[in-house]
Image 1: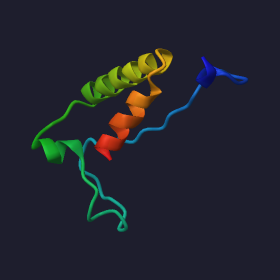
Image 2 (image 1 turned 180 degrees about the horizontal axis):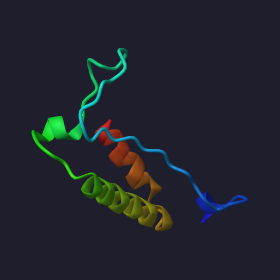
Image 3 (image 1 turned 135 degrees about the horizontal axis):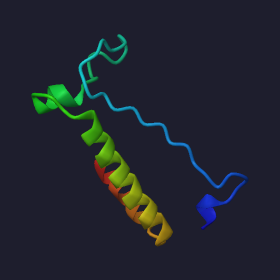
Length: 79
């Protein structure tokens, strides 16, 4: 597939998910949050990781099937 072309054929994705409360930098402190606070209790880091990996696998399958437009549409709907 075209998106896998290049010298290494790989992609590095950096994702940050605030799972537990933290001291956020001043410039984002008024809008930053975390999953534990939003859920009102403990959230499993491993569970979050599993869901993220599952969604990345779904996105890769969509790309391989030529459905990049589906990913873009979902991203726009969520933004």
